Amino acid sequence: MKFFLILLLSITLYAKPRVIALSPSINEIIFALGKGDTIVANTEFSNYPKEAQNIPKVGGYFSVNLEKVIALKPDMVMLQAYDMQLVENLKRLNINHLLLKTNSMEDIVNTITKIADYYDEKEYSAQILSNIQKSLKSIENIVHNQKVLMVISATTNFSKPIYVVGHEVYLEDIILRSHNKNAYDVPTLAQPTINLEGIIKLNPDIVILLAPYLHQSSTTKEELIKVWKSIPINASKKSHIYVIDKEYAGIPSQRVQYFIEEYKKALEDVARK
Image (cartoon, rainbow, N blue to C red; front, side):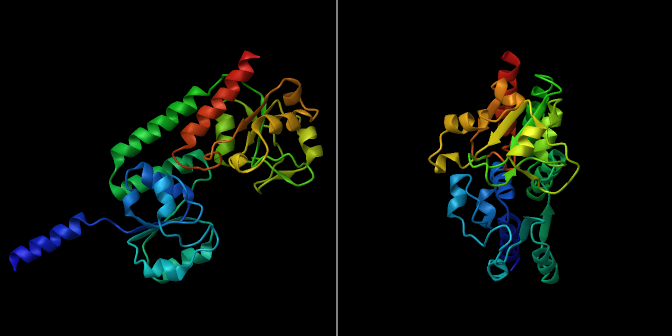
């Protein structure tokens, strides 16, 4: 009997937690901490690393299947505040959950820290956070006081609304940390969209085109830049238009470090010209 109790205790202590990761960012951070094997489900947009693609899916950002979540009997559900009704349902059902944010750089740091605390992986997280801080430090004052416009899911079709980076989001934090300004200076916290006339009016000095799905289209990076260079703005006149087409462009996970490094290359090119 004593042996059986010791064995049961050992199994309990070393059993892997069953975690559901309800955003690509959370999924990536868990894998970065070396705990991807604890994820029993994620979302249909969680495609990095490659192993994440084979994990069962329970929906998207706003379409999580609660029945599937319950059936998986998770020890923890990690999610962001995309669907507050889902959060309320998890509370009502007494399902352990961790509500996380990635809106700002501070949020990203806090989220990595909280996930690492859950797994007791502070050493891993310390290295990840150190790399992010070093990247942020490296972009300071390469150029300064320039108006930077970041365009989300950049397109060559100017007849449709153009999504740009607004305020109090981590991408703006990166612009400000480089000691430059967000060219979008309209005082609103809503997700901003502008048209071609609006871009001309903003007259940015640097344009960063985020195009993570460019490889899925027939448009090349050079063609995208050529179209944007046709706009009469300072960035066009000085050839300060850049494309970041990596899949992590716009994913607020630990891979923000790599995005910052891509942004740094653009700033260094501006400084050389």
